[in-house]
Image 1 (cartoon, rainbow, N blue to C red):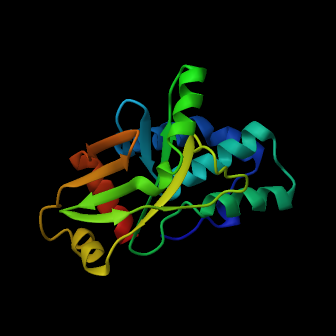
Image 2: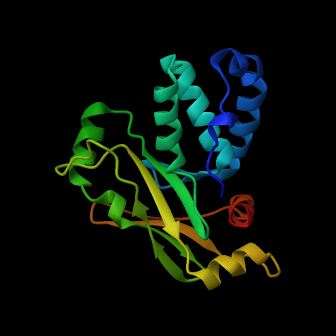
Length: 196
């Protein structure tokens, strides 16, 4: 999948003019791409639209206009765009109670290394995207993960010539074990991602 080109990123004024429509469209896409990962986490499979929205919203929220700072945001979020034969997702741990969330994040250290995508019985471990400031005594509430599919498996999904295999997102951590099957609409979107 092609990374976001700086020319695609709108100025704050231009984005404001199209924000409602663009944001509404991508939020619709995100609904199909979101997976409930048990009671404490959700995953969002990323594509160019979801990443571009994140960039535009970050620039808008933080009022970022300096070219070097804009480029930094583009480069940072481009890391989450899947490469060839890859799928990418952001996993968010969402526990409303602060004390419970903090205790879970300490207990779930290494969470990002225990996530896998299971495609038709083949387990593909996640590769976490490292971020500055990652801690060793706890996990973070947001994880950026990539799944490098074996070439034959990626080709099988991409071709669309047969019915898509069952796909599930799994976490196998001592304090959090869950398997979440992906809905058919999510699987179709991921097949499309592999084609782009």
